[in-house]
Image (cartoon, rainbow, N blue to C red; front, side, top):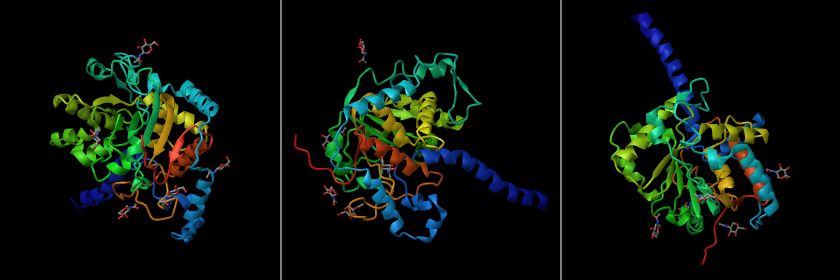
Amino acid sequence: MRVMRTLMLWLLPVILLCSFCSVAFWIFLSNNNVIPQPSSRIPQKSSETKSCKGCSKDNVLIAKALENYSHKWKRHEANFKKFRSLLSSKCHAVSKAVVTQNNTPLGSNVIYDGERRKPLQVTQALFNILAKEQPFGNATWESCAVVGNGGILANSSCGEEINSAQFVIRCNLPPLDNRYEKDVGNKTNLVTANPSILHEKYSGLMERRRPFVESLRPYGQALLLLPAFSYGHNTPVSLRAFYTLEDFGSNNLLPIFLNPEYLRRLSKFWRERGLNSVRPSTGLIMASLALEICSNVHLYGFWPFNKHPNDSRPITNHYYDDRESKKNVHSMPTEFEHLLKLHKQGVIRIHLGECQPTHS
Ligand SMILES: *[C@@H]1O[C@H](CO)[C@@H](O)[C@H](O)[C@H]1NC(C)=O
Ligand SMILES: *[C@@H]1O[C@H](CO)[C@@H](O)[C@H](O)[C@H]1NC(C)=O
Ligand SMILES: *[C@@H]1O[C@H](CO)[C@@H](O)[C@H](O)[C@H]1NC(C)=O
Ligand SMILES: *[C@@H]1O[C@H](CO)[C@@H](O)[C@H](O)[C@H]1NC(C)=O
Ligand SMILES: *[C@@H]1O[C@H](CO)[C@@H](O)[C@H](O)[C@H]1NC(C)=O
């Protein structure tokens, strides 16, 4: 008995650690991964910065980032076209971003992007619930707003401006109630839902499912993008989300599945540009998608520091809470650097700080 107990005492943490590691990645990719990250991690590129506690190091990094930021942004048509054609030649978001009956035939294999050795065969049942055709049409939207969930959106008054975009993309089922509407708007055309939030907020849809369905009302008729095929263990909960919407006859949201092949291509694209994280965050994935389907891409709520760029006042991790992000994410500031570069080149527009009231 004693031996067993001792063994268990040793084994349990190991088991916990292992299962933590496997989910940690998705946790990282989910609620916390929407670009903004606590700046506490940013200075840790060099270890000696540890001695510098909440001091000017952040300010130096912020100042450096802002060097390449201009409030007076100007679109550069040639740069935009060049970047977009490069991106679409490598990633093909329009035909590949979503798993469809077209790009994923019956009997073929879906290769999990984080677990390549255990493919999922497309059975008739799975095939039947795939989108018949890719949901973006051949439409190029005139303007898209990609809304990250960063604390920089709090008190930004950007809601009206965000709503004015033709296509609004949001990440990981963010709250849109009237506490936030002024800052983040209420229009949604696409919203992502990562497996971890389905587990955390809705008990993995193993219990009552009505709260889940009701909480989706604010997103109207948006596409609900489920990254179901990154890891095998993500599939069941994502399918439960799909079936829940179907069973409740909720014909508002249209659930679709993110294509792991697109994710693989996109990771490669950004890796080749020096982003050496395992894979891009949801924020970067959505910004990349937008660059292929929209003529004007605006980013809101992307800012990976915990001080406001204008006046250095502290800002929270998300516009709706201050939940700490998991570690393992030093790609965030690097991702932001890449986006800033595109901002500087007139390809994508990052909005920091307050929005001006629009009068149209
Ligand atoms: C700002 O732009 C310069 C020149 O393009 C680049 O070398 C530098 O790395 C950029 N800095 C940041 C923080 O993005
Ligand atoms: C896509 O383009 C084709 C040919 O240009 C057109 O017939 C079709 O209606 C378009 N589909 C969408 C969804 O816009
Ligand atoms: C957004 O808010 C406006 C004004 O409060 C309202 O008229 C509109 O229906 C809302 N839109 C959505 C998608 O909830
Ligand atoms: C932030 O800076 C921009 C540009 O300088 C300015 O328009 C805006 O009013 C500032 N906002 C705050 C809160 O200081
Ligand atoms: C936003 O404004 C409210 C009310 O003025 C204030 O209490 C809050 O601290 C502000 N939040 C941020 C992140 O500046």
